[in-house]
Amino acid sequence: MFGSLFMFIPLFLIMYFLMIRPQMKRQKEHRAMLEKLAKGDEVITNGGIAGTVSNIGESFITVEVADGVQLRVQKGAIANVLPRGTLKSA
Figure (spheres, rainbow, N blue to C red):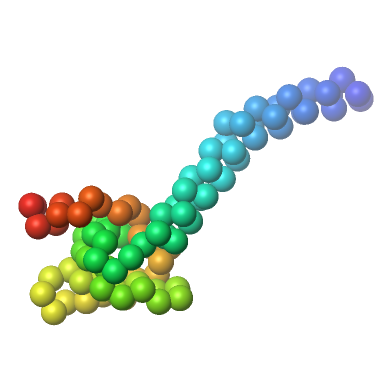
């Protein structure tokens, strides 16, 4: 009985270091990225829509995708922040 118990402890440690810990690190980095968002940042959403942040609310962000076209998306839907000038060069 103790032999099988001691076998599960290393298995759990392996799972922690290979799966759980990297996921927690990615979540922490994503949260930090969302906190640093500012008006004028160029972003890409999870759906692949690229635009410029025009307004930041508590849980929603307004992204301008073209002149006069604005979309409201949830903060969590922002996948990546692009370097400034990326959208103008494309």
